[in-house]
Image (cartoon, rainbow, N blue to C red; front, side, top):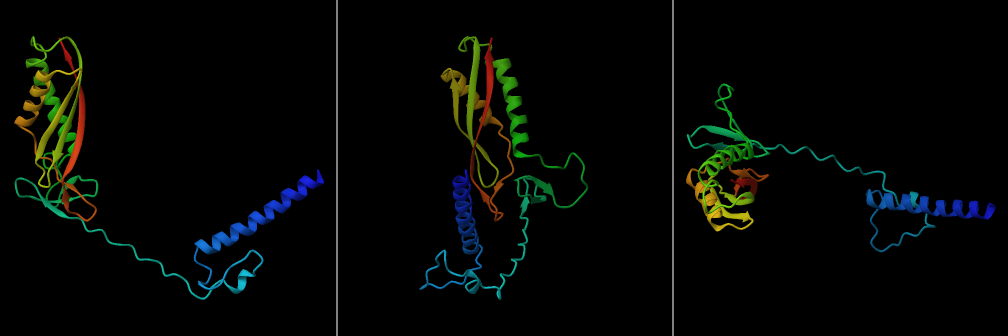
Length: 196
């Protein structure tokens, strides 16, 4: 029992010594001597540099880019790609919605027209159809539907979905990078249609 306790004590002392050396190395408190080697048995107090302290970096000021919407109103783009009006009263009619909300509302209207006009036809069998839509938001906010995948495969339904999504696609807010410049983004959206 004493031997096991002694071995555990010895192992923990080596671990503690190694941990302090590691901490000193990575925290930058050891002087950088390129030609010297630091051993476990060396006295580290002579090699620790306590005279210099690293200055704290000042916080960087984030500049919010100014974006104009389709009517020419100036808008301040936030970091999460939500644009808010720069000036003027804050009523519900003038606030700009998030891209995801705008796209969901648009797709919900398209789904209701698809259910009323396409899903009752003879070319669509009964059952559930999983629809995956790939779309691209350009730097000016213009949306382009690139691909429509329907599972189980139905070419007629895929063509109808793509055609109806492309007819009156809304203009979304441009997606901004951390520097405030607009970038082209590809996104996906899925929904389910039921044949009757």
